[in-house]
Length: 267
Image 1 (tube, helix red, strand yellow):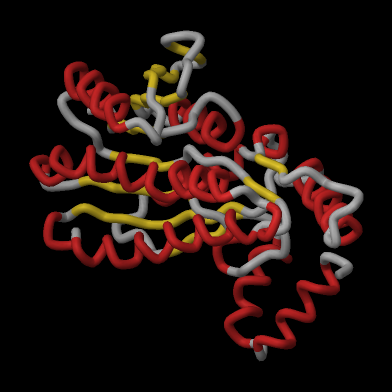
Image 2 (image 1 turned 120 degrees about the vertical axis):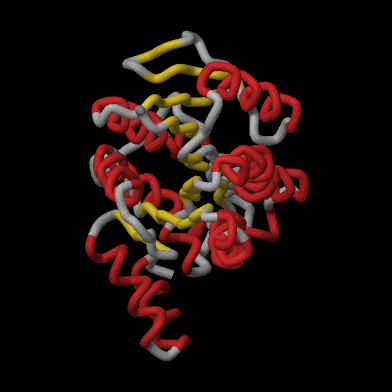
């Protein structure tokens, strides 16, 4: 019997690539979007779901269970970006990014846990980010949300071990997607004390996305994780230098590592 996969944020970018790749491998895939335009695209069954609205999560879960009676894999992929000097980001935008990137995945996890516990099995994959392993200039809030989700996963997988429900994080680096278009950008004000450095950093971030990896690599990575008998706690997917940066943070003195980041962002 085909495994049933539920993936949030599947209408574009990394989520779309993962969903469509898993369809080619024989999975029954339900993708979610806040406003799906079609019920099925390239073999992916679409449902309306907004991770900031609990009622839409409950409805989507009911629809999946009505048709399939189970959920074998949950992939928490829905999220958004945010950039800007922390001092100049409105508090409502800071709260909004946590609602989507942190509390959103937790809501979906809570919705699927009773079903997985009843099944006696399940796998939850949280899509975090390489940026979640380090505080990046002008991406402080984004790094914070992804870091928080990664640490929560570490704790929760121990809480759920007795129920045979497995959790893991997969952290992508920069991929060639439309994420930059959907980010909240604090306005680049010419009279801001941060104008010069924020402008340079913003241009560099966009360049990284434009020249990022093929998002199909994330589909391949997730497929491999699903087939692991005992998934690891963390996986990193992306360019070599981005993955090695996480290793370097663990072995270099903190000020040396900070200097590497400052040099990279030309600050």
